[in-house]
Image (cartoon, rainbow, N blue to C red; front, top):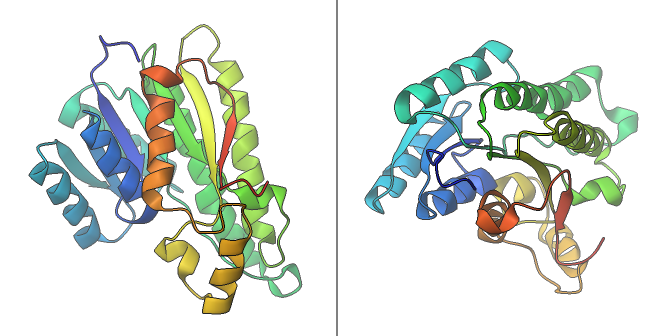
Length: 246
């Protein structure tokens, strides 16, 4: 990144899982972190406390990314706390595992509200606020390429995220701002493990040639690369961090 930029990062969905791992990693990289969360105040405050205990700077800001007014306020509070936002990582998302035949309109709408409209809202604010030389990262999923049963609405929402990401990369031509997506494979988070039997978990773990689940920290390392000085020539890409199965 441009060293002249204030190193401030907004990380959505940062109270747990991959988002929390990203927030902790970027704090170690020297960023002041805005820990966004939707509802779990205690988990968000734990993340802030952990960052501060390690010598970093962080503040928790509650906002529902599906609401444009909330996202605008999130960026306002981030700028008041630490100045211009040079990095935006949108890791907030929901995953409902349901077959298409029994999914409801409400299931579809809830998934798209957070994963698609939420991404759109965050990207819109980032496009208008991130200064020259900044970085923007979204989250897709490797299920987009696999078409697993029961992932229809979720995979469709993440396919939309990939299109929005590549489109914004083109729209920001000339500003030296990169926009990329990370598409994790099966990663050992609460979101992934919830509702799955041990047999299902083991089956997912055997999919990649590395024959294991990824860790949130490994995904955070990929984000660190994309927003750091070595990632400046990567733009408009979907980086599939999944152990090699697609």
